[in-house]
Amino acid sequence: MKLDVNVLRYLSKDDFRVLTAVEMGMRNHEIVPSELVDRIAGLKHGGTYKVLKNLLKYKLLHHDRSKYDGFRLTYLGYDFLAIKTLVNRGVFTGVGRQIGVGKESDIFEVAQEDGTILAMKLHRLGRTSFRAVKSKRDYLRHRSSFSWLYLSRLAALKEFAFMKALEEHDFPVPKAIDCNRHCVIMSLVQGYPMVQVKQLQNPETIFEKIIGIVVRLAEHGLIHCDFNEFNIMIDDEEKITMIDFPQMVSVSHQNAQMYFDRDIECIFKFFRKRFNMSFQEERDDETEVEVDENSRPSFFDITKDANALDRELEASGFTKKEQNDLDKFIEGGMEKNEDSDEDEESDDEEETVESNEEGNLNEMRSLQLQEEEQNSSNGVEAEVELDDNEK
Ligand code: ADP
Ligand code: MG
Image (cartoon, rainbow, N blue to C red; front, side, top):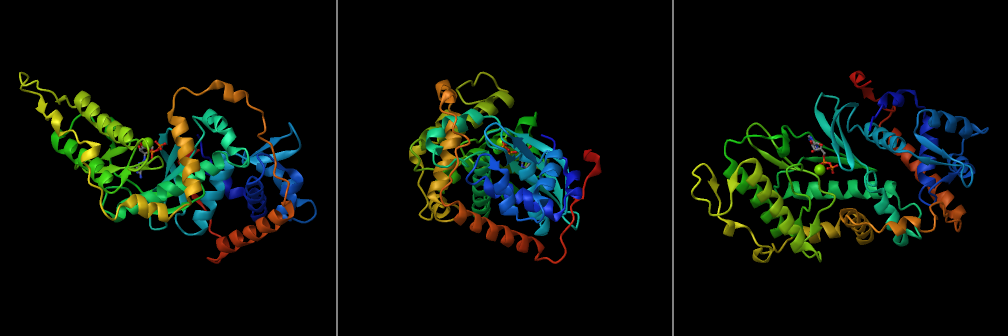
């Protein structure tokens, strides 16, 4: 997805106020009624409607008139809110080129004032498995805002918390710098995903290092669950960095053994194919690297560390409910055979939660003020610099 951040230059304080108002309205409404946007934004003299037009023009909002006149944020709108907040916090000053397109994310370079380049991961849950979101409708019945927006925010929050904890325990991961909404800022990893590597000086050493990481993770109570050549980076010195953590689970997860075995199998398979490593007794071929199949770690041999990270993480970061929401979605997405009937389910996407609307409105107003205050606490509002090559 293209992130034309140039638009940021043309957005005023009022534009952001209205954009934030739509975001807040989306807690209770899939499509936020125009009058509600206006009430939350609280701009004078019908100012909201003019601003809404502007935001539409830049594709930060989507206008929906199918049931009533209302708006919802687009991914771009959500991106801008996160970017603006992080820039105002002084985390970075400019957005550069896109360096990665994941299954459910976009990765960009961002620059700090002193020229340091960081990586920005924008989570886009539901991009490839929107049906999975729909099929979980049951579960979402009472939270119509349980949407890509909520899920992407949870994914970012989880990824940030895990990256931080892993780094503190000396796992080779990017340095977690900051997080806002669906956006995680981390150090830029030099090198490339393993999938691009055709040759290694010491495949056995790298192989053992990687398997060692899976085992040590499990000893710390965790399973990566997507540990493969796409999520392992390697640099010219053959230094390994693992990335991509939103789907990690605890070793006490009911499918833990399956996930553990799958991670291990992915590595075995990749090294077997790519580097011609042999895990069977094929001693007749001298060129093959021998690794005893018996060395394959077993989930049941893992001794869990007393200060395991899974508990530590459970206690911090986000609530059990948020964790469950995200896990349900991610696991749902991993199941290939979606029940298509569920798509037919009652179309209650726009179901709104009218009760307590006034209370919510006040809460939203005060949140908006807090956000604005936080954003301007560094004095003058920061400007975002842009990489013009992007255009
Ligand atoms: P997804 O969850 O969508 O798979 P990833 O976190 O795996 O996203 O990132 C997708 C791609 O972006 C990676 O394969 C890698 O090429 C690149 N990437 C991600 N994080 C970084 C980083 N910190 N530094 C450099 N490149 C990165
Ligand atoms: Mg990935």
